[in-house]
Image 1 (cartoon, helix red, strand yellow):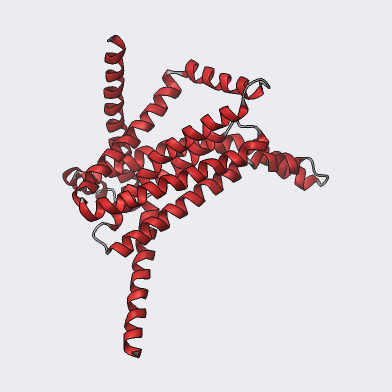
Image 2: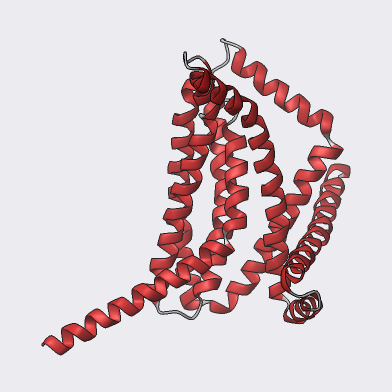
Length: 301
């Protein structure tokens, strides 16, 4: 009896150790998507009235939990019955990330007027007392949850690729763990970011000179933080998406690794990242061109 109990405890410890290692690996691989998820959701919530920011973040967070509840069982089913589908799904997801990055850049630099008009329309809607704010918030939440579903699918797909071939219990534990960590982490940080300006305003109105200085610094830094998150999120799209595509084509992956090794050390790592980003930009541009071509054909009809 004692030996059986010890064997059981040893098996449990082994499973937990595997789960811990695989969770760390999956978290590292999905960190790029996490940065993009954080930046996009912080932008989605921006523009909401101050007293409604946290309720909107919570509404999107609940939608994200629903998304994960759909995606985790689907991923386990694919891993169990259609394991050959994991790599193609990762490739599609990687291409989509690259496309989304290129689309964001194209919208920012090629459609500046349209972007400015959309922002102005939203600001007028929030300021207008006759506008149904609940409807505006509902639309924002719906768009944010839809964006979250796409990025959550990327996170789950990358995690599934990491645990492929592992026992079912290990796959389940790692997938659920990553889903919970990413959701709580992203929306906890989003809640902190959207209330950062309120914290700065509060401190800037305190009597102490030190508190006021810190508050003014926070207020000055908040817009730059949002811009930095947006830039980091876009860069992460190309790095993560390009990396997925590179590793999905073994010949290309081996060739780029051999090329990067020549630089050695830190330069080799930077060269590898640069190659992944370059592949991501090229792939995203090709997909974007194809999507725009299809749109034009439909418009002419």
